[in-house]
Every structure is written in structure tokens, then in C-alpha cells.
Length: 239
Image (cartoon, rainbow, N blue to C red; front, side, top):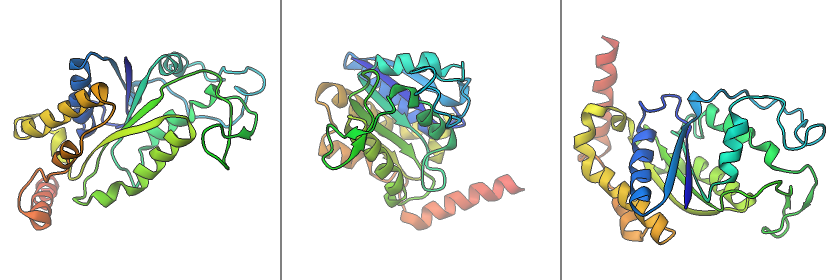
């Protein structure tokens, strides 16, 4: 099985999102999958012009001759896609949105009744692609409700693009994961993320008990303690 992961963090490897993707992909490889991780920040990737030339004058070919040409080929050849993005202003990062916009050449312009979602309209796909999706995300707040808009967006993308949304790894107050010096503190949590990767390949989902484990607080003491830790950190940086 071929797994493609897209890291939409502008901080690339220096991010909590990367730490989660690294662990999840490690578990998938242990279960026999072939994985590839792309950092959106490192791609030569222009924003979509909305010119529709890939639909009209050069079907399937974007006017931008950049890294996305090869990336789309890799995307089409994948069985499983993982979208990783921190929460920026209630949603995905700008660079992740640019990546998604640049997938437009994968579709024909024609409007048709959606083949999988009754009552909805769709575009015929030009090529086959992943049939399973996972969302990986971190945020700075301690509430899982912070992910609500992001989850709704990617669930809708999966629904309308013919993919099964088979799981998610969401980490509240995830900024400390980006600090490599603190990695030993999170070894048990990252081990659970690896197990989630194994389950996604072996059983096409994450068991309920493991999902609950992945939602446990990384820091004891409740919100008050999290506020204290975060505010101490920002106070040090301002000195």
C-alpha cells in the first residue's frame, strides 16, 4: 500500500505536526506500507490562478510548470493520503489550502450528479487517486472543539472526492511537540500514534480505546496549568 503524507506546516520538520506525521508513518511502515512525506513549504508551488486552463486549453496540465506536476502524479498513484496541518485561525494553513487548490487539474470541468453523494453535484475525476484519507493536526488551545471547523472541512473533502475518512490524530496544546529536546517527555504518546498508524494499515481504522488514549492530556493540572506553562513561555520570549 502506498501512503502519501502532506505536511502543511510552514515550519516543516520544526513543528508538532511533523512529529505526529513522523510517528504515524513509522507505524504504517511497520505494518508493511510504503510511505512518502512531502513538506508543502519546500515545494516550488505557485498559487492557483483560477484561470481554468487545465480544464480548457491544456486539459490536465496546469499553466504553472512547477513541482506540483510531479506531485499530482505521486498523489494519483497513492492508495492513502494523510493531510497534516496545524490549526491556523480555525482552519488549515494557507500553504495547505494552496496545495489543495492546485489539485484542480485532476478533474474534468463537466457538472454531473455526484456518483456517491445523492443530491450533490460533482466533477468527473480525470485520474484515479487515493481512496482513504486521514487528518493529522495540532493546535495551541486545550479544547478539542478547536478542531471542529478543520475536521468538517476535511470530512467534506473526503466525502465529495470519493475517499473514506478513516481516522484522525488531533493534538491539543501541541506546541511543545515541536521542541526536539522535549521529545522524551512524549515518548509514550508518540508510541500510541505509531500504534494508530499500524491499525490504519492493518484494520483500516483506529480502535476506540486507542482513540481515547490519543486524546489524553499531555500535561496534568487542567487548563489553569496549561495557561501557566504557556504564559511563562511567552513571557520568557519577550524578555
